Length: 201
Ligand code: ITT
Image (cartoon, rainbow, N blue to C red):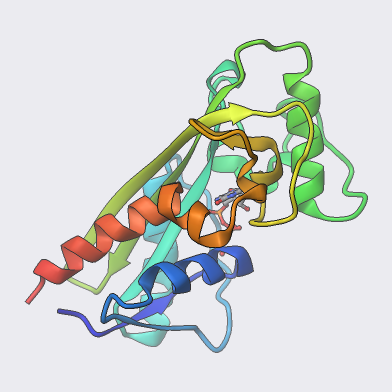
């Protein structure tokens, strides 16, 4: 089994969650000393995750874990989707000014586009890739839920304040980190990935 993986992400929320999910797995995560600019121009989450993992692997030469994730809202034709991190800045749905943070601008745009919509179903999705040169593996995780009418809670990151997971009366940002990791797209994808890594000799 692999003992060390480079974690290729610049998103602090992701780092915190992935480190906690991997605790006790027997796999040590290493953070890169410097971030590498990767253009996320793939047409799918998997393609973007692969691009990120490969770019870091080529510099650091150690097995690398990267993930691409996002929020999919079927009634909005699947947007924010692969554009989740920069949804505020794309022309589809109108550009949203950043007043404080990009996360807030993304939320503001999504709530604006969801105004008056009754079908509020949505899901978070993560594609996680481990790239190690001639061999690579990937895993997926999904978390189904609904878009709320206003932001609630301070935890998590990104769209968490406006996402209510199925079966919960709280937003994702109102869950404790362990609660989020137990049901989240990222938690599921990473646990699936750890199972695959355990099968590697
Ligand atoms: P890296 O590419 O460096 O990993 P990033 O933030 O650009 O970081 P993505 O391209 O995968 O990552 O974009 C994911 C975006 O989707 C993220 O910025 C959030 O807006 C949203 N997102 C992903 N997972 C989320 C979660 O668990 N809770 C809330 N929002 C999430």
